[in-house]
Each structure stands twice: as C-alpha cells, then as structure tokens.
Length: 350
Image 1 (tube, rainbow, N blue to C red):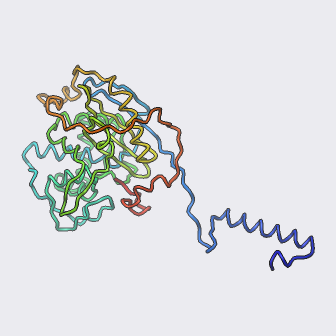
Image 2: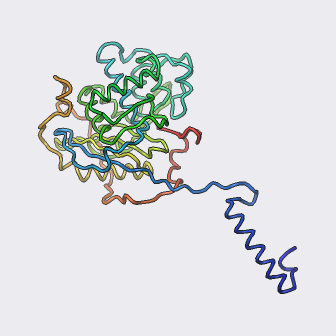
Image 3: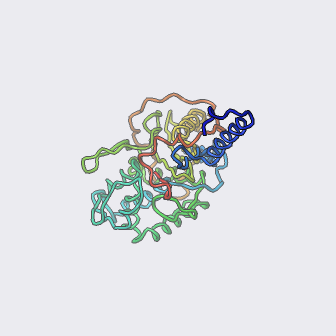
C-alpha cells in the first residue's frame, strides 16, 4: 500500500511511522537495498610510540612511550638481515650463494616475491627483496637456510636481541607476520637500527636500495622517506593492522647522525609526515662530533660508517610541522596498500 493511497488521516500517520521505523531498522542493521550487510567504517587508533637517538653519542633526543611493547611487523626483517649479514661476514654464505625455497616459505602470505617450492634465490637478491618489497617468503628462505627451521631461527633472533641489549623484544618468526607473542619497543628498534650499521656498514648500504630487478620485474621500495628526505640512508618500514604503520629511519646530515623510530602510524602518509617532522626538529640537535660509539661497548674494531663515503644526496620533501598526533583517520586511508594486502583473516603485513 503506497502512501499516496492512504486517505484517512489516522491511517496516513500510521503509514508515515511505519516507513520511518523501517528506515531506522535498515540503518541500524547496516543493510543495503539488496539485503546485504554493509561494511562499517573503522576508525583506527594505533598506540603511537616514537624515539629519536643521537647515533654519535647514544643520547635520547626525543621519546614518547618508547619502552612500551608494540608489534614490530616487518621491522622484524632488520634482525633477519642482521643474522644474514653475520653469516656473510663469517664466510658461511656469499652474495651469490643460492638459497632453496621450501613449501613453508612459498606458502607465506603477501607481501612476497611469489617464489615456488624448489626455486632458489641468490643471497644478494634476498637482501634486496627484504629491504624493498619486504618479502615474507624470502624472510623464511633466509631463516631456514641459517636456522634449519623458522622456529629455530626465531630463537636465534631473540638471543641476538638480548646480546645487543634489546631486552624487551621477542621474535617468533622471521617476517613479522601477525603473532601476539612477538613484540618489541621503539627503543629496542632504535638500538637495532643503530648497531646494524655499526657492525655491518658495507652490507647496511643495501637498506638504501630504492629498486632492483628480479626475474625481469622491477621492484620498488616501500620506504618513501628514503626517496624524499635529504640524508636518509635507510632503513625499514613495517605494517600489520595490529601494529599500525612503523618506520625506522637513519639520517646523516652536516656531520650529524640520528636514528628515529615511529611505531603505530595511522597511515603510511601520516607516519612518513611525522618522521619528516622528527628529522626536521632533531637533526640539528645531534652532536657533530662522535663522543661515544653506540656499538663500541659491544664490538671492538668496528668500522664507523661516518668514515665511509655517503650516498648521493636526495632532494628533501616539504616538512610537515606540528604534526597533529590526535588526528583520527578512517579505514579508507589504508587504500594505497590494498594491492599488497593479504586476506583480512591474515592481516596483511609489509
């Protein structure tokens, strides 16, 4: 019965009420005209944490919740690479060594290279795939080559973290894919971001890779700050839904050197903007003369990366001043990552 055919005033009022209640019910149930439930807009509020370290003195220049536990996501791969660099330095692996791909490694969710069981990948290509595409299948290939299994390699990663003074970090896999038992802190990631370049300055330079070609396909880095900001020489991005958007960045400018960490960015864009702000605010507050090497107490005879030639400078993108830390963004802000995301049940990681 249409509203136009209701002639009695009381009946007309009743019809209006029915129509209104029906509209409310449809809205409350998030049901569209075809009877399907609509997806709700999700407001994402990750727990932000950050820290800025003066890499020449070890002094903390800025910190916010840097000792609270967070999920590392693909920042995990920095430790995976640390252990790989150790094996290269020890002569156990060479850059042209071939690593075998297992069924377990091949089955890892994106982001990945798409390696198949029985394939092989060169160590150098594995390094580049980890620092640019953040390939989860490659992380497991490395783990199995060094530890025999990913679980054993994760135990090795945690042991190394303790040896480096990362007392609040536990690793359970080589990639950073979601696991509630795998956690870290912004401070621990700043320590790792500093010592990996102190201990392996020549291999650390792979973190400055912006693209490489694998099997005829050009692969680009996820690290936009690396390409945008003057003096940035690495090192790694990370993302799973539970962690937010993470980033460790190393910057050398005017004889100064800082390592900054942001964990829990709401989007990749806001994370990068906040990192640019941290660099802008604190790079000139760092010491221009080395007082204490952060790695000196852990290893003797290390090469100071500041004694090596720097990569060519990059143009600096505009600085975003006074970044609004309380800004709320909805789930649509994640759109740029949709092509790389795994199924929702896995919670994509990069």
